[in-house]
Length: 277
Image (cartoon, rainbow, N blue to C red; front, side, top):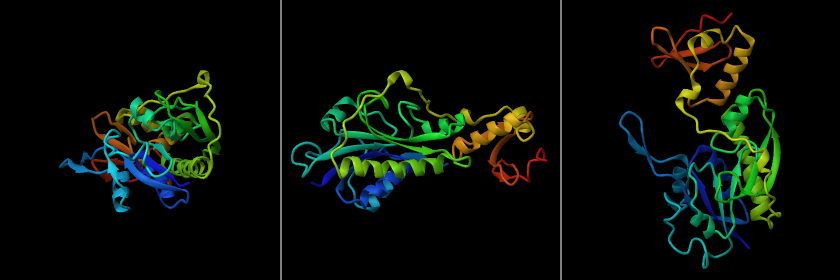
């Protein structure tokens, strides 16, 4: 029987999975739930996120609240078994939403849970210099990234991986795993996580990308600082980036490490940073 899928997501990584689900056999995208439009840019224009844009382009019904479904998208009368899948949604689902899926709502998470629970697993794994990673599908419960594991597969973090490249690869793998384990077959028995081994990540802020000017200045001369700034650059590509302020109060942002370190000052790219030898 064809599975009906209600999708929860809001980021570019969510779209990676949406694309796979849209063209897959064995499931039909019934609806997308995403976050409301946000003010962007100097004029604070309300702008939809990538998931909403994708869904509208493909005529998939979009809702900005998990409590706003018209009946019967989930529950009786939905026209087949209904699954929920949560991918980089950025919101915690209330228990009443989880209960509405009768245990058939799952999360695709880009780490080997219980390691790296929370909102920034990709960035933190790169910052920590780990090489073994993976993607995990869990059955949602009331706690963040806490539910039992349905499926898990390992991958490797390459020396040149950024948050973007690593995330794209893991979520493509996660989409395939979701389709094979949940849309095309009966899921394996879910196994509880070993909560004693859990590690946690925090929500990123702009300040996470800040380096003191002395560290920034010496980052290409001192070996341990080279490693630190390289990992930060790979982890924080796009946002928050790696940045500092000079003793005179000027803000510098790192925009490239190769072939020579480049910085950005007041929106203009500098000549190669003079500390590079």
